[in-house]
Each structure stands twice: as structure tokens, then as C-alpha cells.
Amino acid sequence: MAFDSRDTAAFHGVWVFCEQRDGKLMNTDFELISEGRKLADELGCELCGVLLGHNVEGLAKELGGYGADKIYVCDHELLETYTTDGYAKVICDLVEEKKPEVFLIGATNIGRDLGPRCAARLHTGLTADCTHLDVDVEKYKAFLKTTSTIDVDNTVFEQNTNLKMTRPAFGGHLMATIICPRFRPQMSTVRPGVMKKAPFDQAKADAVVVEKPAVALSKEDIHVDVLEVKKAAKKLVDLIGADVVVSVGRGISKDVERGIQIAEELADALGGVVGASRAVVDAGWMSADHQVGQTGKTVHPKIYVALGISGAIQHKAGMQDSECIIAVNKNETAPIFEVASYGIVGDLFKVGPMLAESIRTLKASK
Amino acid sequence: MKAIVCVKQVPDTSGKVAVKEDGTMDRASMATITNPDDMNAIEAALKLKDETGCEVTVVSMGPPPAEGMLRELLAMGADKAVLVSGREFGGSDTYATSQILAAAIKKIGVDDETIIFCGRQAIDGDTAQVGPQIAEKLGLPQVTYVADIKAEEKSLTVQRMLEDGYMTIRVQLPCLLTCIKELNQPRYMSVSGIVDCFSKPYEIFDFNTLKDDPLIDLDTIGLKGSPTNVYKSFSPPVKGAGMMLEGADKDTCDKLVALLDEKHII
Ligand SMILES: Cc1cc2nc3c(=O)[nH]c(=O)nc-3n(C[C@H](O)[C@H](O)[C@H](O)COP(=O)(O)OP(=O)(O)OC[C@H]3O[C@@H](n4cnc5c(N)ncnc54)[C@H](O)[C@@H]3O)c2cc1C
Ligand SMILES: Nc1ncnc2c1ncn2[C@@H]1O[C@H](COP(=O)(O)O)[C@@H](O)[C@H]1O
Image 1 (cartoon, each protein chain N blue to C red):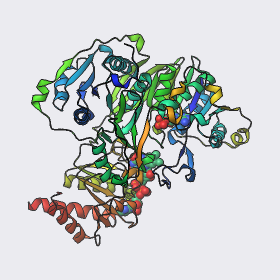
Image 2 (image 1 turned 60 degrees about the vertical axis):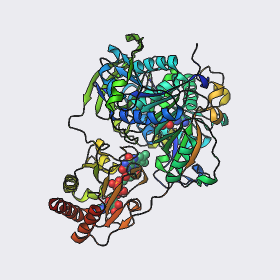
Image 3 (image 1 turned 180 degrees about the horizontal axis):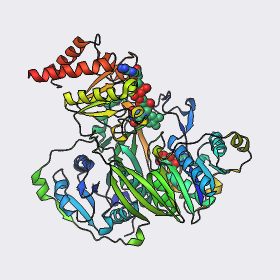
Image 4 (image 1 turned 60 degrees about the horizontal axis):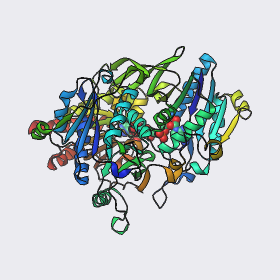
């Protein structure tokens, strides 16, 4: 039967695109499989992962361990390195054949290249960079109660089982929940680091079904040549996975080197990593992988320390869900204090080292 | 070679942002700017013009006041401007927008030496979807997150940024690129450019200009036709401020650490 994205009743199942680079699964895969499991349970349907690459079948079990029922492994030598053309063709062919109802893709640089291309080809909507997903209206209402100013009990909600895809817009000033009621699959890219990873379950890993669909792909389908894939020379900082992030802002400008050193020492004392505001990255004081915020990374560590960061909305968008926020800023009216659990009005060059010392003293006494 | 640049006028989200009672953005009360990444896209096209003398056309979809932005881009050095504007187009999501822009670009003319430049993403929606969706609608290869471009005879060698490094990619023309801020430093308007910008070709494509193009599916444009709809929108609650500590000396730090310890945070 021909593929018709408007024939919504013909679509079943939740799918997750499982991205791998160099034969390694990405963290977003586990986050999305875990989240996809919840949605599939609410919809009462199957959860499938879609894994593309060359000689990657061995990765399927691990994905099962986070809750996938089935993994489609599309193996082809032309899929060894990511190309938009190759991946989009294989994925769209499979979607047209199997017709999933929901399709989630990690909002990585690759996911955000692939997602829109596929959605345009499949004639369906795509919601970008989502931070929350619901099917059930009651669950959605419970979510709104804690995260919005809406008077939930006195608001009318249309009852449906459409996927409700919530995302920040206008640089975090507004949240929008998007639906795609008339077309399938309902597609969304999901921001890395936001969805919680379920615990790994070996029994589920062993039970996962692996299916290998035929892949129809030839060189002529791909209109680019990937000449080189280069990893960043130094090890990148793992902001998203860190329990503690100590970030510095333009407040270190007086003595950049010393400022960064203070942050490193504090991060060391707390067992965390160093992040930065965009001002610091734009000035070239730290590399882009350190940037927290709307155009950087979203983090929600146990402890986030902001040293000399004013707290612009774009910065807050990436860190305000941290469990405990400590801000040091010499200006008592800095907006960062509006989201801080603890605020100290003072000079980071003085407070930073003292704080590190207090922490070391405490830890030594334990 | 030939360059077509997609630019969008957006509310300046770094300034004061006004939210209306119903939870939608009060665009009218906000300052507008040319989308930052699109400035890098136009600069990339103008650099190509400096090297090869190619023609640069800027195209924007939006309400009539976007003319001001397009004139500024002409003053920077673009040769022609097209404004895609019509009430039927209003409220389009990325799928709908890309159909309309693809039809407009087709009308401007894509030959086998054309490069279409977009910004990576627009700061109002932050979707980064319109570029790849235009490429799909036009059946062209795309490269997103472009941080470096080298032009050759009939191809480009570009750097595409990844989170953990980059890819070097050769892509055949015609193609579409989405540009990031690392690509270049946008130039300013020149004095002679400002003088000339009102005499350069400026066209408006309205609904009637584009409606017969097969790329446009009348069922999937505008607010009604867009595949995605807003179910609810809301402003995030202001997180209650926490505790401001007295002083900024060693005692303050010790007190904070004791509090963190008490609450088992460290
Ligand atoms: C589209 C867009 C996307 C953006 N994305 C991001 C993003 O992802 N992440 C991000 O961070 N920003 C982002 N920004 C930029 C953001 O708007 C702010 O410009 C930026 O976060 C400011 O960085 P800052 O707080 O370090 O600098 P500033 O705003 O200059 O603040 C410096 C602070 O340090 C304090 N200070 C100075 N000296 C000291 C001292 N000795 N001790 C203690 N405090 C001191 C000052 O009081 C001030 O509050 C974006 C902007 C736009 C337009
Ligand atoms: N209305 C529009 N007119 C012209 N170009 C647009 C429009 N909307 C988006 N674009 C282009 O697509 C890019 C990505 O936009 P978005 O998908 O909205 O984040 C922008 O940087 C522009 O280059």
C-alpha cells in the first residue's frame, strides 16, 4: 500500500533513532529509549530502535537493556560514516514500510540534520529540540502544575493521545507544547541530557529482538563525499554527564588565567568539571564545548556553581534545572541570583579560593 | 556561481521580551533584528562574490516591514532582494515555510552552479529545520553546521561541525549550506552601498506568484495547513530565589559548606 502520512490510523509503535559514531552508541540513545519506553507503555505499543551503520549489530543488545523491544539494524558499508543522503533514504524507506506512530531523534548535530530532511520527505511535522514529552493528558496536566503558571484545574484541555511535545521558544522566554494531529509519524528531536536514563536491565537486553531489514542504497544516492572525520584534539569536557559543574563568566576578565584556575580548583574540590558562559567562549578564553545555555549545553547537575555570570535568560535556559545552584557575583542585582539556591555577593577571585578551601577542609574531616 | 541567501527577521530575544496574557509573544512591542546566523550566511555569500563575482540574491519570507532588513543586506553588497509575503503564508511552521521558500527559490532560479545559504537556526524558534527542509523540497544535497567553505570548480569543500570534532565534506553544486557563527565575521554596510540599496532590484512574491508551483501544497501552508500546531504555550514560572548569604568572607564560605553538608548535597 502506498505511504500516506495523513492516514493516521495506519501508524503504530514508538521508534527511536539510535545514533552511533565510530561504532559507539551515544548517551542520547539510552535517554531516548528510556523515554520512548514510557510513551510506548502509555500508548500500549511496541518500542523499536533504529540503528544504522556498518557492523553495528553488536550494539543492539545494549539498547534492549534500556527498554527497547526490537532493534532494526540497517547494515551497509555506505552507512559506515554518516551522510544525510544515505541515512535519510534508509530511514524514510523503513518508515514508509513499517509506519511508526511516533519517531524520536536525539537533537545532536547529526539528529538535527537528519530529522528535518526525513520529516520533509515523509510529509509530516517535526518539533525541534524538545525537553518534555507526554501522551496522556492527565500526565501532561501534572507536568504543567509544576512547570507553568497556568491554572491547570480551571483550564480546558482537549483530550487526545497525540504526542505532546514541549520545548522552549524565544530563547527560553516561552514554552510551547506542540502537537502534530493530522500527520504521522509524529516526529521530534529531543535535547540531549534532558530525559532520564532508565537503569540497565540485563534480562531485557537478552530478550531484545533484532531485525535486519534489507537496505537499498547505492553510491548514486549519496551526493557528498566525506573526506575526513576529525575528532577534537583534546578530550572534550563531559558537561552533560557531570554531577558538579563550576562555570565562569565574563567576571573573570580581570585575570582570565587565574579565574579559570580558581574554577578548576573548586571543581576539583567538589569532584566536577568546568563550564562557561557564552561570553567566555566568544572571547576565546575557553573552547565551545564548555558553553552552557541555549546555544550550548543543557545541564542539570547536583551542584552548579556560577562564578561571575550575570544570568542572562539564554544562560539560565541551560542550567536552571540544576538541583542546587550557587552563585557568586559582585553585583547584588545580577539576575543569576533569581535562580540561585545560595547567593554570595562578592568578588569571585576572593570567594572562589575560600570556598574551595572550606570544601577541602570538610571533606578531609569526614 | 550564483548565491541565494535565506534571511529571517526575528525579535531580539536578548532584549526585553514581552509575553501577552494569552501566553503568546508580543512581537509588535519587540525590537527586530536580522537573525544572527543569517548574517554569517550573507557574509559567506558576499565572500564568494568577492572571489568569483557571482550574483547574490537575498530572500526572506515575512510581513512587509522586512523590506528594511532586505535593503540593509543590499547595502552590505547583495545584488537583488525578494520578499515572500502574503497573508496566506502567515503562521506557517517549518514544513510549510520550507515549501514556500523552496518555490520562491525555484522562481529566482537554481542552476547547476547555485549555492543556497541559510543560517543554522533562527533565534525565535531555534528549530534549525528550514534549511534542510528547503534542500529536501528542492532535491538538493545539504550540509549543515558549516564552519568553513572552500569553493572549487563545480563543488565545495566544507567543514561541518560536530559536537566532538568536525567532518570535511565535498559537495557537488547545486547545494544548500547552513552557516554557523564560527564561519566568518559579517561585514558592515558600505556608504556607497547605502546610497545604492534603493535602486537595486527588489521584488515581492505574493501568494498568487507562487500558488501554482507544484512544490506548494495548498493544504499544508499557513497556520491552518501547517502539520504542527501549538497545543498550549506558557511561560516558565520564575524560580523562587533562594538564600542570600551574609558577607563574602571565609566565615560565609564555611557556613555555606556546612549547609550543603547538612542537606547532603556534598
Ligand atoms: C541567540 C543567543 C543565544 C545565546 N546563547 C547563550 C548560551 O547558550 N549560553 C550563554 O551563557 N549565553 C548565551 N547568550 C548570551 C547571553 O545573552 C549573555 O550575553 C551571556 O550569557 C553573558 O555572559 P556572562 O554572564 O559571562 O557575562 P556578563 O553578562 O558580562 O556578566 C558578567 C558578570 O560578572 C560579574 N562580575 C564581574 N567581575 C566579577 C568579580 N570579580 N567577581 C564576581 N562577579 C564579577 C558582573 O557583575 C556580571 O554580572 C546568547 C545570546 C543570544 C542572543
Ligand atoms: N521566514 C523565513 N524567511 C527566510 N529564511 C528563513 C525563514 N525562516 C527560516 N529561514 C532560514 O532557515 C534558517 C533556519 O531557520 P529555523 O528553522 O526557523 O531555525 C534561518 O537561519 C534562515 O536562513
